[in-house]
Image 1 (cartoon, rainbow over the protein chains, first blue to last red):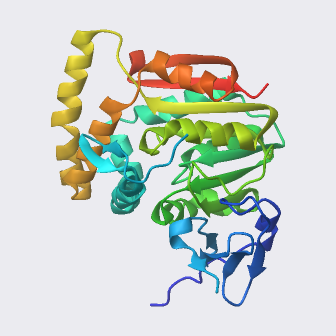
Image 2 (cartoon, rainbow over the protein chains, first blue to last red):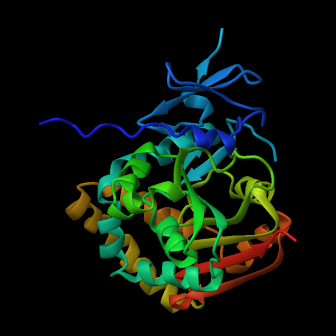
Length: 62
Length: 250
């Protein structure tokens, strides 16, 4: 049995998404599958093509 | 509104710290995600479908509109909206990843994939710019939000001027005898059905307790007005077992 491939993140979504904390812009890191908010110093994960825009789930940038 | 993480709030009939509530709510919906649609059918004898259709009747989606459906979980509202609008776009936001994954697996999601986005997020801190949607809906979700007034403020922010808010939520029956009969049903029957169908009594116990604790129609109408919405009104569904609240960003 092989799992169906996970749907990919659609970069067009970036037009609508902003940082939920600062309302600043996000940049898409395709390799890490993250949406990076420089203004908040956070990287929000994208899992199975779905952006997870929760502070609790975000990685703190160094 | 103040954000004290240690401030007490309710989780069903339990008292928990505000900072804990979202995690607990996510636990419930992660637990019920795969059986959520079938449980809704069983618990309400299919009536939740009629209520959601009533929501669409009042909302009257128009072609090209952009919808944000918060706590949209398995896509029930977004699919209905897109079918009625003909053309348009729906963003489904939910606190729980598992609910969105369940929604995206549904056949309608495939057919409408180009018109749908799925986002995990918090109703009190939306990841969208001001004035970006024509319609904001939240269906059986706002009672699970830690601070519903903050969620309404965010709804107002992301709606464009002229945009429409529509809230579908369990509410209160107009007289004590009916409310008592309904409480007997909900507190005795629903957690048992949750156990039988989803193998999860505790999550359904939370659901009935949270329904009972949610503000009544007039109180919630005041909250909608306090958030800035104009021409705010409500309609009872099934005598008030559920209610629809509508408001406009004027």
